[in-house]
Every structure is written in C-alpha cells, then in structure tokens.
Length: 415
Image (cartoon, rainbow, N blue to C red; front, side):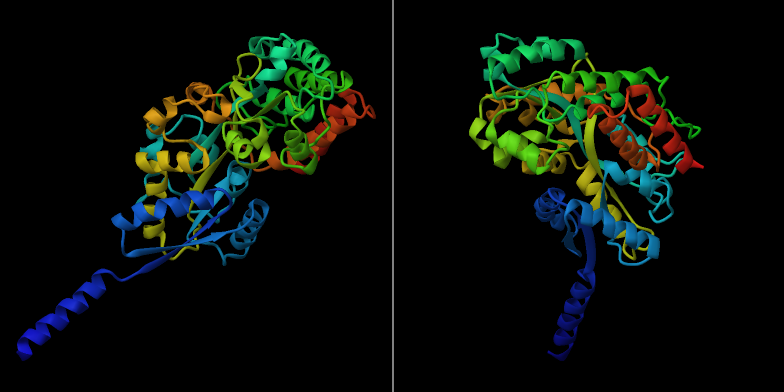
C-alpha cells in the first residue's frame, strides 16, 4: 500500500511538473486585444502550459509605453503588438529581437505572407523585428444612393483624380448639404503613397535622401489635387480620421465618399454610420492605384524572459490559417497571411455594403500592393509634410514655397 501511495504521489508530481505554467504577457491595443482574446481557447489547447495575460492600452498610450520600455530596457511585455505607423521607428532601434536569426528563422515564413508586409518590418541590414498579422487594403467607400441621385456612375469617381473632382461636384450639387470627402488632405496622402515602385520610399530613398521637393512631380500633384478639392469646397474640413468633426460628418450621413482600409466597414456598421447600412459600397482607389491603410505586427522585445513561449504565440496568431480567419471574423481586419482570404467567408456578401462581395475586391487589391521602403523618420516627415499642406490649403503659401520649406525642415532633422 505504501509503495502504491509513493507511486501515486510521484505521478502527481510528474503531472504538475509537466503542466508548469509560463505566464506570457502580451501588449496590445484595440481591436487587436479582441483578436488575442478570441485566439486564446485555440492556443491553450495546443499549449496548456502557457498562460497568456493581455495588457491592453489605447493606441497612442500603448506605443508610448513601448517606446519608454525599449529605451529604458524594462517594462516591456513578452509579446508586443506594433502598428505600421511605428514599426520603422522600432525597427531602427535595438530593443526588439531579430526574428531572422535562429531559433526563429522568420525568413522561412516570408512566402506565406503578402509580399509588401515583411519589408515593412525589416531593417536595411536584414533584421526582422515583427511578423505581420493584418493589413488594410485601400478602398474608396461611396454612398450609392447619393451617386444615383446625381446620376454619377461609381466608375466615374475612380477613373482618375480629375474625374473624381469633376463628378464629385455633380454629386455635391445634387445632394445639398453633403460633402464629397471628409478632408482634402486625404487625397494628397493617397497620391503620395500610390504609384510607387516596389522598394521605393514615400519620404526618403534607400540612401536617406529626402524626396520631398518642389521639383518632385508626385508631391506637386498630391498638393495640387488637394488644393483643387479644397478650392471647389468639396471637403468637410474634418481633419484626420476619428477626429470629432470626422465622426460627426459620418454620423450625420452627409459624406459621399471616404478612402480607408477595408477595416472601416467594421466601424461604420458598429457605431460610425449604423443608420446608413445598405447605402454604402466599395471600389478601388482612383486611377487604378492600390495602397494599404495600416497593418499590425507582433514582435518580441529583447528584454523578454519568455522568448520561446512568445514565439509560439506569435506563430499561432500569424501563421495559423484558422486563427487568421477567426481574427477577420472578430474585427474585420484583413489577414496578412496569403492563404486566409481563400476561405469561403471572403466570397460572401457584406451585409452592411448591400451584400456586395467587397472582400473579393479587397483580396485582389491586397495582391497588387507594392512593398514600400520604410524609414525611422517617416513619422516626422509625415508631420512636416502635413503641416506644409495645411499652409497650401489655407492659402498662406503656394505649393512650391510650402514644399521647399518642408524639404529644408526634414533635411535639417536628417543631419
């Protein structure tokens, strides 16, 4: 009997050791926190020994906290979500684990993802600091009822930017009180990010040369189109996305078009424009161009003490086909994994968009997005260029002067 008790006790101890828990902390922001939460049941079945603790902060707070943690060498989570707007900044530092090296060997995963995603998280010397999880295929959303009233076909709006403006005037005229676009600056942003060749940068080239210039046709065109939209009084002057003015314009239903990633539908149907379900549709960006609105990555800070468990979670979140589909169903964020959009759910009509099969449109657009070279100073350059555009839109500077001043400011910071 004593021997049986000893054996039973030994079995219990062995079981306890086998299921010893590793507590893994994950730093995320909305709505990625919903994705990770939805993923945990499936992940825990595979790795019952790993307990995942989700630490979610507001978008800006999350990235500010991560900046501080990486600079001080303490306080980071084992896994950190990083948005596209910050990935270049963190890539150029030394606070993130290089996932191209063993035991991660992330280079072997590249072929599974859309071509433009991995370069965004890869440094010039080949370090990989994040694995892509979602993207935002760019789309022109438009109010089908407002266009019909103006007898303007959707194709007339996206044939070119000139056609967008000319036919946009008709839409606004036929629907008093409406605006064609929330803010003229959006058009400039799209033009600056589209039509680039693979590997080209928006603000800098590979040698760190500043591309912002009054002699750069891409910048001149971007500022010119935005100015034409403002002068024609087609925009609501609502500023950036999710500003109070932008939100109000949507909720009032007086916007005829908007440019954004596919993920915008989730916001529109859930809170932004719930009363206008069935009236919105989607199509490609003007001029047969393609771009991505954001995207998210998961990385491992070098200070993490649970890198093995962290890598297991990252691989599950990003390379598991069923999980990528579940993430899409949870938040509407379009998968970065190539195989996920082949799921039957992507061929279904989108109820909010009048049952339009828009996901097929976005899948096609995603395959045509070119990889852009990112720079750690992109965020700074974007702010300076945005300020320069504001001076053009308000009439205080002409386009050549505004771009020349912006070029000087950026070059000063690069030195």
